[in-house]
Length: 365
Image 1: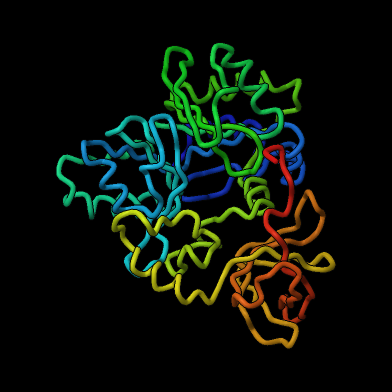
Image 2 (image 1 turned 30 degrees about the horizontal axis):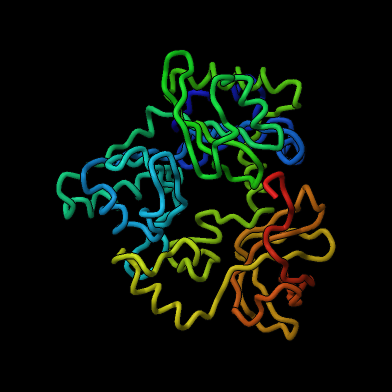
């Protein structure tokens, strides 16, 4: 099992540790609900150093990534980032990722921890067709710290007083120095709240982590584990690989058509997306259930006539709304908000309704 540079801190803080993506990671500290509410109301700090980190470099780096991904990298400039997808030829999703344009010939990729090795091999498999392009795996050398919540930017300004974060827009990033080392600070995140994700060398991860916690004491900052990370993203309706998206799901079926640019040149999986676009039969939607029963992944979803129409992708008890919520992959005719559904839980049909995503409003609006 791998450990992040912050593992000892988590252990000393009494975190519950689990295996996630091949890493020993904190799932919770004080408790999922308390950590979730800290992020919604104040600030939370996450160790997400298990994520995969790659560099793609070379004069044809953009051409290579345009071929490998669905979104259009022509839309971003140096200092900007873009949410993106990699597809198989049949249209299933290899992974979702964020691509950062460092320079015109240098791109930085952050991919899911559980898919990192697969993603690297997938990229390497196709790179030879683009002469002079190199692919580097820096996952073992880098840490990733997320600072999220309504007070996140105030805390960040205390630790980095010389950096003008006010001018940093969503999905933009800047470089800064900390203890003599360069790091990348991006206005990205997985919670729907204001905040940043900071990529830095392992050797300064602990000093920065402790500095952010110290600066956040007056703002009620809390360390947050993977448990609350999941409830936070689900309240926003954000996709998680292996749940809303996977190798058998086309992005057009998963509320991700906005990430697929059909007007750009050829990319792997484009033909499959074009075929699905003219005959879209399924979709991912949000829903809530009556009562307190929790919907879990792969539970069956039915219409009110008890005809099976899909399955649950993700489910939880929303700490913000205090009701059971989830996402489901269902036949498109039932996807409109307000549509009544049934979810089978241990042989019992529980009533619910399709809901608009996201489930909650956040500090980002």
